[in-house]
Image (cartoon, rainbow over all chains, first blue to last red; front, side, top):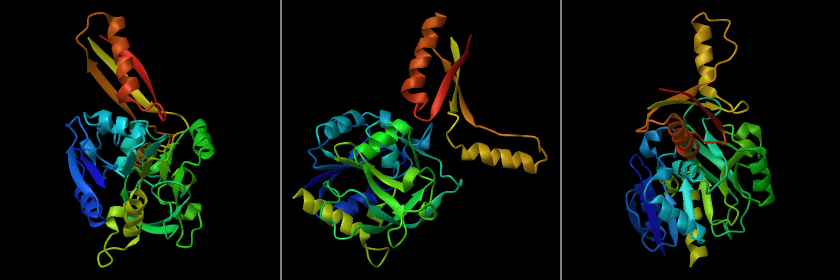
Length: 227
Length: 80
């Protein structure tokens, strides 16, 4: 399986993502934002970080970079496109995903482990996953998912919510919502479910000694579904 | 020609930055501040002498990049 990780100026989770992808069997290539062609890929990843210094709005400048036309073309033809954290912000700015990630409700940069519950597993990312509550890491200042009422209706009608913030036992309540996101949304699909944007970082949870293993479950499951 | 544009958050969108600024002002003794909403101001120098054409270009820039219309409104506030 071939993967590509796009590097923007200011990306800082690109290498972690490459390490994770390789660990679970992907042949990964790093792609610079100024390139115009994507290598042959089964999965393209927009990594976390602070692309273009978060200037203007998080992800807005990256959404207009040279490589993005190829990324959009790849996703529109059904290719798997995963955006983590800043990658999720880029996906909303390109309008591949609906809504926008606002500043966290309580004006704090949040860096901690959270639990997320998988809402929809009828897709390549979560099909057959052995746990439906994952402990993952978040680190963001703008993770407060917001959208218009019309967009929310469409999200619900098409079952596009991927993961919700929840308690260790899977309760989806306000008290387990770290950033004020509507409906505790931590991750979202497009209508066709080949594009996934998520605030939590699975690539930070792939080593039992350093962090935890729920990211391993995510990546192992993903590559199994692609084989 | 220089075009000025402002981008502001829509009314029902939460503005934590504005809230913090308001709290700081309150702490400084400005008790009568009811609300602060923070926005962005752009000065766009366009190589164009026709005011209408220049404003139209700036409007397009706002729609395509400077504002995110899901959460923000924009206004061309002047040209000179």
